[in-house]
Length: 175
Image (cartoon, rainbow, N blue to C red):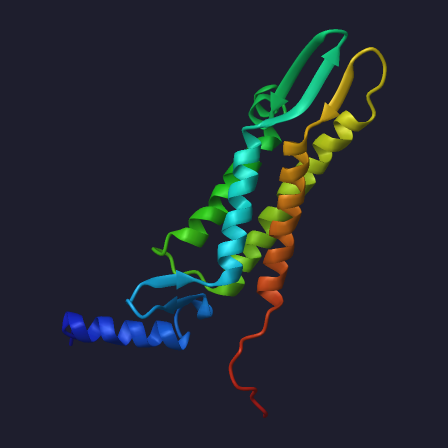
C-alpha cells in the first residue's frame, strides 16, 4: 500500500524534524527546506579550505634572485603520489556532507571525517618533515597556504571525533 504523495511528504517531514532519520543531522525549517546541523556545516567548510589550499602554493624555493613555488598538485605530480589522497578524501567529506542522496548518520559522517582528517594530516606532516631539514644554498620554506591546509586537516579530524563522541540530546534512559 503506497501513501499519497502529500501524506508521504508530511510523514517524512515529521520524521526529519523529530530527528528519526539521518541521526538528527538535519532539521526542517518553517519553509520546509532541509538544513544541515552546525557540526556538519563546519566540517564541510573546513574541508573546502583544505581542497582550495591543495591547489595553492605550498613550497617556496629561492636561490639568489630566482624564486619558484610548488603547489600540492605540483608535488603530487612530481612523484609523491600519496598526496592525491588529500583531494580525494576531502571530496568524499564534502559529498557526504552536502549531497542528501545517501542519508548518512552523524556517527558515520564523523567516522569518515575523522579518518580522512587523520590521513590528510599525516600526509601533510610528512611533506613538512621532508622540507624542514633543508639548509644551504637553496632556501626552501613552506607557505602560509600549506600551514592553513595542515591546521584545517587537523580541525577536520577533531570535528569528526566530536561528532562521534557527541551524545544525542534525547531523554536519558534509565534501565
